[in-house]
Image 1 (cartoon, rainbow, N blue to C red):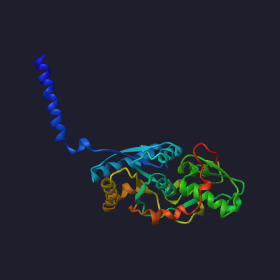
Image 2 (image 1 turned 60 degrees about the horizontal axis):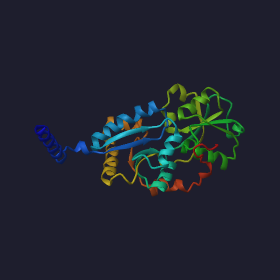
Image 3 (image 1 turned 135 degrees about the vertical axis):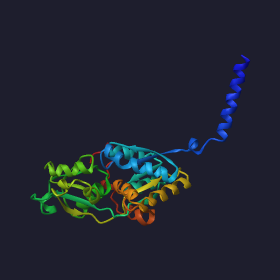
Image 4 (image 1 turned 180 degrees about the vertical axis):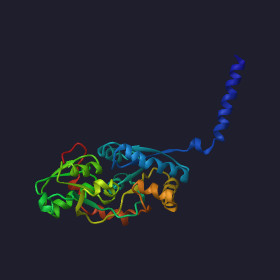
Length: 283
């Protein structure tokens, strides 16, 4: 028995010594990184996994990508402050800042514009032609493609229509092409990523005013050093062709530093909360 206990004491001492000199990777925290489900989970994974792999190299931090198949699940996680880092739209940025103190780190360099598309050679020539029609939107609370766009159509244009929520920008565009709806909400950036055969089948009928683009934000529990490394790491990707492609694929092209007051506070003043649909609520 004595040799057994001696070996056990020796192993415990070795473990204690290893803990004192353990390499950095052994104690590195893995941060959750959630992304708004603008496309299918597979597509979002293909867009974001390479970027986070590169960001790990740039920062020395570790990230776990969280991709949800439904916007409502993503929004529920965000409302509870679950993600450490998150890619989110401007309206979600405002709500996350108010609820949990999330801080924007970087945003896409191009302005965000919501669009309403119709068949390129179809009969719809003006918004008046859509009175009483079915209009597709990615989800109720997708900011530029649905929430802001619906508010403008109702408040500014006085249009009455029936909204249909189809679970993604690509789905919304294809509903128009297949003539399941008369028009669909989306974004100029997501339409530009669709195949040419789909883009040429559609025509932009209406456009929202420009706004600051989607942001990568951090929960205040994330140490300031880690936040700053992520901010610098994402902006540094602009420095080479491979990095720029990663940013573009993730819809963060031309990433630059974000400022809440400058970029997102104006969105808080739009007063579009009346058009928000809570999880499980009726549109």
